[in-house]
Image (cartoon, rainbow, N blue to C red; front, side, top):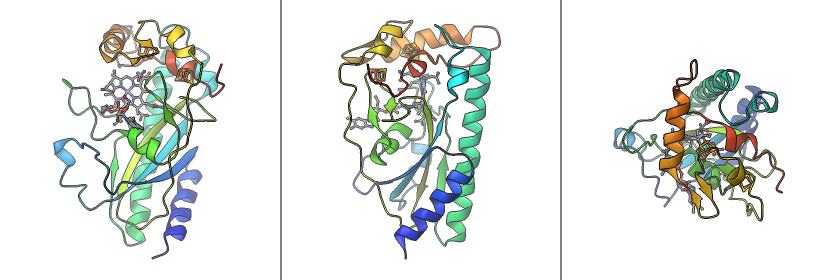
Length: 223
Ligand code: B12
Ligand code: SF4
Ligand code: SF4
């Protein structure tokens, strides 16, 4: 099996469909804490492909202190592109003789705990896409937090990437911008953030737990 060749074939397919970032995490020995629904389905899939799609700076520019309708549409469209691309990669992996499962870009499966099937940020970190910033988001060295992610778990032998060595340094743009006071040097207060997102979901036409403020300010330029 040619790990390098498989990697390049999948990367080319991801980029062809508009992805900004492609990387592979070696998940051997990693505690993924998957939701029970997929625990059996992902056994023996030791590689985590992390794809990332950069959010539109023009759309993000419309956000001041709350989500806008165009951001809501963009959010949904980007999730759709990520999910479509993930499924295309599953097809290609099967054609190459492997097996794979695409994890939805943005599906909450436990509403009490507010968790998805697995953490895309964890896989994206291990695949070398960035570090966990003061906002709790994955911060890419070039695009900041302005990237959404999806994951494909597979057993197709692949070359793997390594985490990047980065940090927020003295930057605190997200802390200063958060409308809920949910961010501090100590990190992200999930309950405060969630309460704010519930309020935003009540805005006519939004109807989703979205905000976008800490993403809009985290543009890859550390200040
Ligand atoms: C449910 C959910 C929420 C819940 C919060 C739930 C929670 N407990 O995290 C609510 C509704 C509050 C929420 C809010 C937002 N969300 Co949300 N959300 C999700 C979802 C669907 C599941 C998250 C989950 O399972 N969390 C469980 C915990 C255990 O995992 P985690 O928070 O992902 O990761 C933590 C640990 O794994 C650990 N960790 C991971 N890697 C590493 C590495 C090291 C070295 C260390 C030490 C720790 C560590 O630290 C992480 C951060 O605390 C994911 C999609 C997915 N399946 O990942 C999107 C996701 C996390 N959301 C995302 C976004 C963008 C948002 C919002 C900005 C809303 C918006 N779109 O406008 C806000 C951001 C708030 C913030 N500052 O983080 C993006 C993040 C992209 C990025 N660049 O980081 C994701 C990945 C969706 C996507 N497809 O891109 N979200
Ligand atoms: S805005 Fe600055 S402090 Fe906040 S996560 Fe991004 S780089 Fe880190
Ligand atoms: S999503 Fe909004 S409320 Fe939540 S931490 Fe980011 S800026 Fe604050």
